[in-house]
Length: 393
Image (cartoon, rainbow, N blue to C red; front, side, top):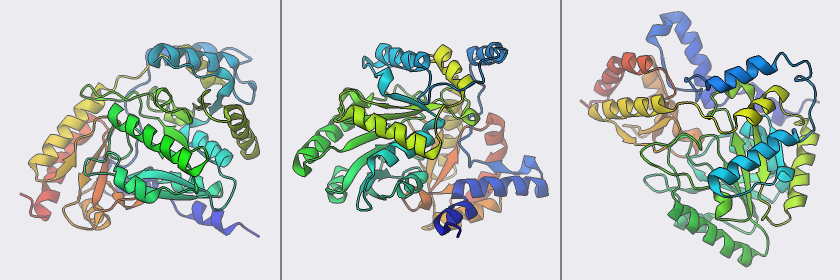
């Protein structure tokens, strides 16, 4: 028999991927120059030169394509530990760090390690990356979510209403996909205190899982607090996809804070989950890239410039946007109640944007601003037509 749950996942794409594939088909019909695809968070800036040099040099090494230790080489795990100590003043333990195929694999095995009963729940904040639900349910639990406020910061009243003793972990994503919100230090301190109190009330650990692929992409002086400095029961899930502009290479890590309750046991459960799913020995070439380029980042100035151009023009056209402080997305309020309907109308003008329903909120659309500046410029006449269609100008 075929697993019907897996069939359902495989036979239906996420809304983001569905629109992306639609965009490729539309380009063939009306010409790529007439399609303004803002769907996929695919970095458009080149990786740092140092990354390219390491790839070119190391690929000549006959042993580079061999297996590493299941959890990754000790050299790359030590490099990650040293980097975080130097940058954030917090020492991640190399022996509690597991190299993964990006943040997605890291989240999947962390949730697998933490969920042990069908009654277990994972909490996150809407808007959220839709795959959190897939990862949680595949691990055997269920995802619940609290609301955010009007600027998409944590709404603690909603959090109080949503959390329950069955919650084993909370996922936070800052800078956030899709809103671009960055949780400031005040928010992080308040969240840590809230969770410490709830742990005492419920009598068990609540692990804070930080999903951090956008940690290096910050604007306007925004600072992204390093969560292990504020809360002991933290698991860091990091990806180099955006920092190094190498999303297709699938490289990241999971690191359990050495201060976490049952840190060693949790780490071994994560390693066991990786083993059970076949997520062992992350790509060896890119482990070496991370080891030698751990302190490098791609130039994200173009993302800020794109944000500024897109937001200013959308607002001139009468649209209402959340001005992001990080990541490379613009979250815009739909001028009509249904974001799905607005997205469908936008398609008729060649504009592809992702409706917010799959992110857990209604009435918004997401623009990915990791596109070429030229695409934004060329899309402005189409955006003007879209605004006129809805009588905004």
